Image (cartoon, rainbow, N blue to C red; front, side):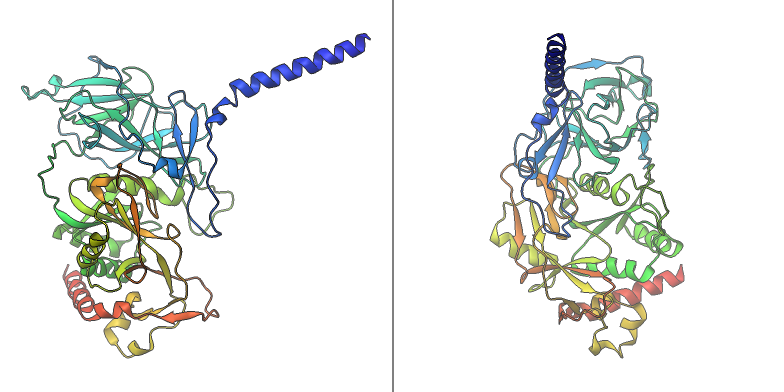
Amino acid sequence: MRVRIKRMLICALTLYLAGVYYFFILSADRSKLSVGPGNEAGDDLDTEMRHVAADGNIVYMKRKEFTGESATQPRRTAYELCPQLLPPPFNTADRQVFLPVGGQGLFYTFSAYVDDRLGKNGVLIILSIGDSRGKMMKFPRYCQVWYRDENEEAPVAATATLNVLPGGPEILPEDKGLRYTGYTFNCPLPSQKRPYAVSLAYNKCDGPSGGVLKVLNTKSWPNTVKPRYRFAVCVTPLHLHYDNLNQFIEMVEMNRELGAEHFTFYNYSIGPRVTKALKHYIKEGVVDLIQWPVPVKVNVWPPIEGYKEELYYFGQIPALNDCLHRYLHKANVTVMTDMDEFIVPRVDRTWRDLFERLGAMDEKVRAYVFKNTFFRTEWPNDESLLKNKSVNEFNLLTQLKTKRENYVSRPHTRSKYFAITERVRIVGIHFVWKGFPGYPERIVPEEVGLLHHYRNWEDPTDKNWIVDRTMHKYSDKLLLRLNNIHRLLKQL
């Protein structure tokens, strides 16, 4: 009898402890929403989005919910002053380094922008990367914002306003489950006065251990200001000592022929020849080069046994979102692309003409998504250009590689897009993740526009191709552009 009672008590205690564990430890998972239907094999799309709540738990949301145009304004919280903090200089530079928060190696901030589309006074957006391990990990909770006293010139006139971050950071999408991911910290501002510097902190009035960020858009941008560029291009970080000069120049000049007016490149590592070309384009005012010294483990080549990548593809997603904010109020359309991709009008010649055609379809959109097709570089060159000396000398992929797969990817798989800058908040690799209410995306019909993707799949025996010479309509002007730029570079 005693043994039976003892066993019953042990069972009851076990059930009780299991209930406590479920209620207190796993209750965070109650907020995990089911993810929509899975993607086809080979799809790069992550279908779920994570958000860090104020208590440190990670909340999972469907992509549909994340892009569902719900409230976009972070809730406002109380503000305090930190008079003991020494103000940074007014001329704080855009250092283009990842500044550690709190010296723990868990979070690094990179850039800060006032998003005056959010709230009455605007919201300070801080772009960063951080360690995503563990649901109860401590996140920076305080936003220290420095303002300049307009009546004083001395730095001591600046004050720091401490803001408890509402809701924690937003986790940027498509992190691939690696240790580090991109974040945005959203700091509602207490007034319409623009801050000049900002830092994050774990505790009230902590001194910024790694330094402060310059707020990169300190001027007000009324709606009457006309953007400087019609089309601006954001490019995935250059890496692995990238030094393919012919490809680089073809990419820039082909996009300029299509309609690109300005480019932003991110330099993780580049070689001397591309560096020389970049300096020329920077001097021309065509390119901005942002240094991108990611402080955590990224992809290496050749592979190293036991080496684990910690941040996906050299921080591609944080870089693209940083680029989006750099073009806020400066570009009508931001084009997200890579070195081996081109958004090509099939009927029209330029992006401007294509955009007008698309605008006639529906002008109230946040992005136009272009479906992808592969022009495989292992397949033979175009037979009609075998004797064209210039095309072969420059190894022009857009002209030589006219055999493409007899298949067009479905939307959001390998696709790229035109983002209407003012209507977008968070971008991904293949589509916009978050925009403003009332602005859906549109899929561009493949007969109107298509993403040409030049890539080697290392399977020359596969001959299931169709010949597509759409890019030949640009041959003459593209060759003229390339001859001019190569001649200029030789003179430098």
